Length: 120
Image 1 (cartoon, rainbow, N blue to C red):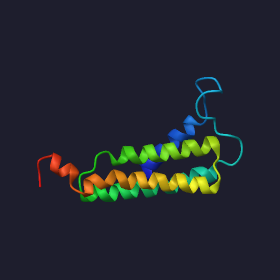
Image 2: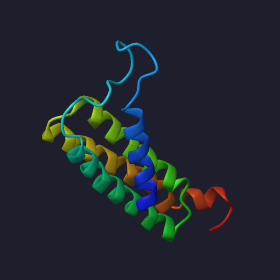
Image 3: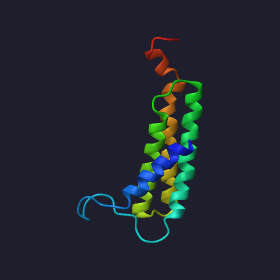
């Protein structure tokens, strides 16, 4: 779980440190100032999402829990590094990430993946 979260945070940090195209397009670079509170916040959220996905994957077959954890951590951290949202928006982003992780688990917990495989 720690490795998956570290990969997502590393990708977000790397993505926030350069720009391929003109400044008018894409996400803004990591703005000046304190970035560590945002990185730390998304480390906690990434670990939580990875733990939820890993716990479900330990019980039932779950498609791509690591990929989803990296994607959620990367997206939240990258957006936070570029735009520095206020605490209320940051909390909403975190809640959305955790809801997506739970929604990803619902078909597996309801037996959707097992019924497609032909098992009971």
